[in-house]
Image (cartoon, rainbow, N blue to C red; front, side, top):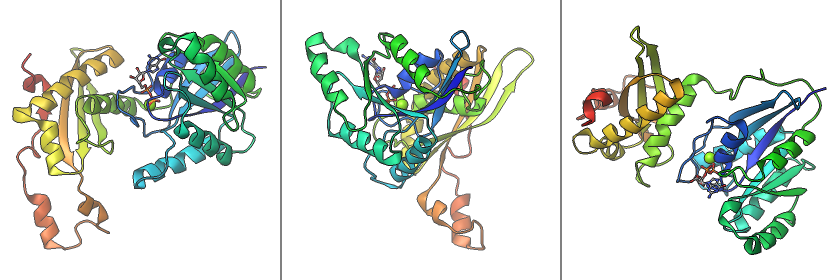
Length: 321
Ligand code: GDP
Ligand code: MG
């Protein structure tokens, strides 16, 4: 009989959850960033070992944090819902930094979300710690509320992963596979591509571009000559954010596009022509009960063309190379 189950991943931002999902799944699923809280969607990575007869479905949760704003609150709600549907929880902590109040907060949140949920703690980044530093961290991890077992790992080097995966495989319930064994993710192709573009937007900007930036992939069209045309829109919240993203003479959007095109080409295994348009989704517009209810001033506002709003940024033309 095979075993299969959902594993809810929790942990402070930047502890290495996305890297771990990618390492376990063996292909790139969740985006990895130098900046915290990149993952706002609950991304599932699917790792099936047909020889061992087990399937692990990893739900890469957004960082559990004290609610600070609507977005974070929504994330918290999603974390709780995802966990309620999980068979076990995997709490990832940063072994280099040691256990802190944030880790304790999350451990308690896991307990509260589902009492009795088996919880494994992965102490990550052990490639950065010497044995003398690691031992007390492992002891502290074992003392976290609700944590049943502790595994020292490095999602980057792969150290300790085999033991962790084997144990997770023992803990998921007996049953048929939840996804076809050849699947690595349940994301649609467009979502995956949008995340790759978003990763480059975040990697190439600072705090001025918040994580609320959204990327929509509108169209993916393979042409006869093998080139794939990808049309995407990046949505920001203010005109000034839009100006930053576009940069002087379109330089920033050109850089983002060139880097994103590289990721898209690696993902699709084809040459890509990326058209990236930066658009503004204003707060006041979102608050309108119904759009276009005869309010002339709003209609006029929407009609004002700003410098770049009507133009597609064709990266292949913007970039100097
Ligand atoms: P998340 O926010 O928890 O999903 O963290 P990410 O997976 O995005 O990783 C955050 C940062 O930590 C990235 O720069 C990763 O490359 C880095 N990282 C993740 N795992 C390891 C590890 O095992 N060792 C080291 N040295 N760095 C890691
Ligand atoms: Mg992540």
